[in-house]
Image (cartoon, rainbow, N blue to C red; front, top):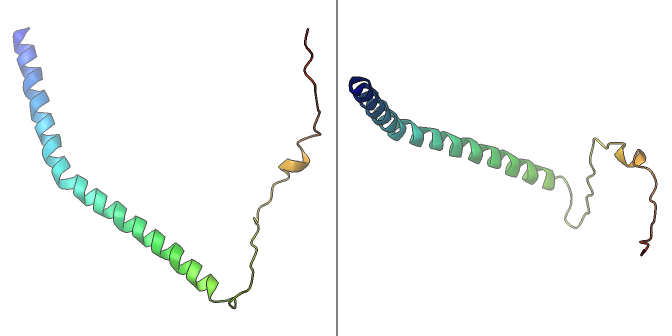
Length: 87
């Protein structure tokens, strides 16, 4: 029983140190990759906004609506007003 406990503790500490060591190597790489992708997406959105803004003249008003309008408002039904009754 004690031998099993010692084996468990040994392997637990071995695996925890391996995970700790690998985490120090791979977590900064993963974080840098995530930051790089996020900044690229932001740059693409920012460039798209700038390119759309150059098509119109200064002072023009542009109203953009949703392209995929749902028919949810037609299916809702009518409003029913009610009063509270004190008993």
